[in-house]
Amino acid sequence: MSGRSPQGAERTSASLSDPSPRSAPEETPRRAPGPTGTAPSTKPAQGPGQAPGEGHAPAAGQAQDEGQAPAAGQAQDEGQAPAAGQAQDEGQAQAAGQAQDEGQAPAAGQAQDEGQAQAAGQATAPAPAPDRARLIRRTRRTLAFVAVLAAGAITLAALSSGTRHGLLDPRSADPYGSRAVAELLKDHGVTTRVVTTAREAADAAGPGTTLLVTDPDRLGTSQRGLLRSAMDLSGGRTVLLAPGSHSLTDLAPGVRTRSATGDDTLAPACDLPAATSAGRATTGDDRRYTTDLPRTTACYPSEGQATLLVLPTGTAGTGTGGDTVLLGSGTILLNENLAQEGNASLALQLLGSRPDLVWYMPSLADSDPAADAEEDKSLVELIPAGWSWALLQLFVAAALAALWRARRLGPLVTEKLPVVIRASEATEGRARLYRKAGARDRASTVLRAATRERLAALVGVPAAQAHDPVTLVPAVSARLGDGGRDVTTTLFGPTPSDDAALVALADHLDALEREVRTS
Image (cartoon, rainbow, N blue to C red; front, side, top):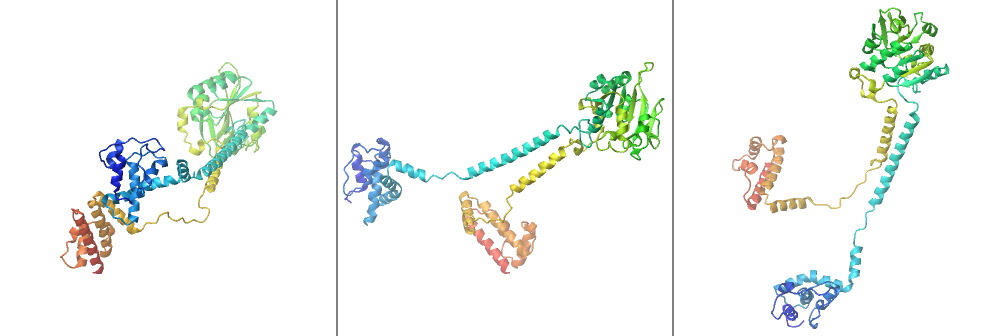
């Protein structure tokens, strides 16, 4: 290496643009960088003792100003000086430190071109995680399972939609439907028509029509009035199933009712042809009726009260010849009970006396809000028929999905922690944080609280009273046996004023605990 210093080499290269001597940091903002990948046009020849980095640094494809190029040269020149055993001043020592950061980067750039550097950077990029494909597969399987379940539910609902219509519905083949009696009436030439509003029922009433009202108590005041007018003027038959006192006031005035008590299957005990030919029937499981009206026929009595009552209807002097049948129970019309006793015969004769049957099932539009408020139904009763099976299927599907997605089907697998930290390192790190934040109050509070809890266990003070000076201090003082130590100040004193006082507090706490343990 030549006798001139690196600062002299820097001044020599800088003299081409400015004759005044300046250091590298002063020269940096005054020199514009050359084009990327090319060296400056004027450059001193490389001497035998100069660092090669000064001439090769721009060849690495990096834009450098004049001040940076000599710095790179200094990095390698001065990095070689310690290897030659030559002395360095303080500035050279700093330049030697830059040799490892700035000088090595151009040296590595000489070994490969700019394209290779980019390729090396791409090679070290993290590969895409394989969990994405796994997540996509899981999502597809889940969606497929949900689609199959939904398709099955829709298929079951579509297949059962034609047969499930509810209680006393002539289209329903359920045990609580009435499709069987409708089919029997069809075989006997009776046409059945289902209506859901009082207006439709009143318009369909006539001399050759039997009007069956399945739930009279659901009707509102206007619907009952409309229906009563049709009953008086039609001249046909009206059958009311289990009407209560709520609807009897308008539809059958003068008739009293009460709930059923006694046997369900009763004998006719009357001269009504339909009852005498049918024999015993299950009419006694809901309502009983009594009346003082003339020309009434009471059948199937239970405890002196009829469960089937026939009343003449029609305006006086018109001679319409219609009648109203109060049937205390709709059990005889259900599919599951139609074949019992004489239920089928009684149902066919009561509903098949005219060629047309209007089956009126009141809808919510015809319901009376006051009547609905009186009915106290549970949540299970409000669920439509058939949904219980659907809920059961959903529960089974959810259980199977839970088993499928369960994580505890096999033995537990132990997993090593990525980093093991010693307790002493964690303590030291926390102490450094306290010191950096100047949190002597927090540090002293933690030290005292931990010491009080340990001392409380040693002297027999409950853990709930470990931080109570009235309880803890006398117990600790009694264990020590001397009054020379101020236990109250040590355990419950003020915050240390500086770091030295905090260290002294820690020593006092350790000494106090040691004495209690050994006493």
